[in-house]
Length: 247
Length: 227
Ligand code: HEM
Ligand code: SF4
Ligand code: FES
Image 1 (cartoon, rainbow over the protein chains, first blue to last red):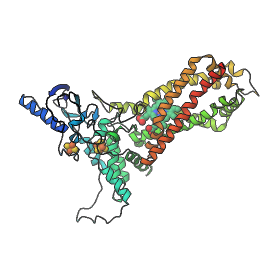
Image 2: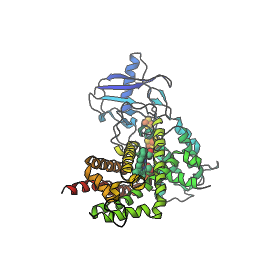
Image 3: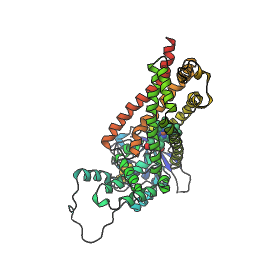
Image 4: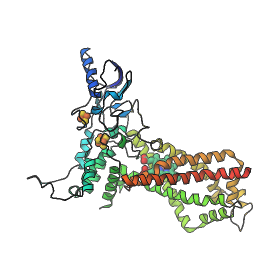
């Protein structure tokens, strides 16, 4: 495949970025999107130019490091996959592909296509945990949990923290991410003792870091590579509203 | 309380409650207005309108309704601004159509159009009945009940552009409601994967009845005057 890439280039946080256009020839339709970018970077290195910086780690859809807004969609045109799992067969020979970093006040660009997602860590640190005593590991089945509940908690826990929900949302809202993190704990008995404090602290942190509010457009759920459902946002709302009723 | 209202979810809570309040108001309003369709003499509608204007319960609810509108509009502005600031640099290319509805992305535009309509609507009827009065209200009265039917139908029959404004108003309100209905429950935490489908269905039924109903009234009055 022959492709034209329009890629966002930006030296550092402060610099004013711009789009650069590159041509690529002979890309295999079976290669992944990131492999295609590897080819681009090899080409740039050969020309003594600065390679394009982009995030990636596992390249198997489990770590949440890869990002990229590809042709106007988070993680590109394929459904329910991360960018590392996106393949070039989803594009056509001769296509022009626009590649941009996540755009959100809470995710400042560090370099080229890499954004700082530290805000997610801060939200987690505010309450995305349970407090347990260290020592010997507990018996896995010591507390019985309804199958439906544990399945739902597991679905919420599938969130890999990639930030596609924020990137897609017209309000740059982090509600789907936060909903996944609150739900996975709120659904389980182990998460209940700290539920009130957690809901308040995590929502306050999310607001403080400059993410928008939720308008319930549902775009996050569609673009989430892990299909986290907006039903978890309803649970987060419930948790937060009830937490505020308690003294 | 202050920290609750400062939070994004707290603000949304007020949007949702005030919105649900407006949703119930619209239904009552439509039921009263539909009397225009069922009695050509106007007595039925005039009595219903008079009852609504004088009934003590409605007199109490009226200021609450005004507060509901003000809260809804105020927080609509605050949230929309905050949401725009949350993305200081936009995308060069963004495809939104596949992941969300147009109405859900344009609630502020739709709401603002509803507000413009509301001002016109209040100036047309409510203001005259309540405060400034009108000759149209005085003529052909029965038992001293003001002839609101005459005021309304005269507007709809004499000026075709008023009919168009009212139909557009109904359509814009309908678009707002297509997203608003389920969203209000979602914001209150009263939705999950099963209830979402039911609430969205109910939302469509409500929207079609309310938007359709408000659009049919001026059209019916105008068309039946031509027959
Ligand atoms: C009778 C008229 C109206 C009704 C029944 C109504 C109802 C609603 C409801 C139920 C919601 C959903 C709240 C939620 O997502 O939880 C909503 C959202 C909204 N409304 Fe209205 N509304 C009306 C008029 C207006 C007006 C006059 C404005 C003024 C600008 C407005 C602006 C908005 C905005 C911006 C949202 C989205 C807020 C957000 O989620 O960010 N609405 N409306
Ligand atoms: S909710 Fe989905 S889109 Fe958002 S961070 Fe988690 S995995 Fe990514
Ligand atoms: S690189 Fe790990 S999810 Fe894509």
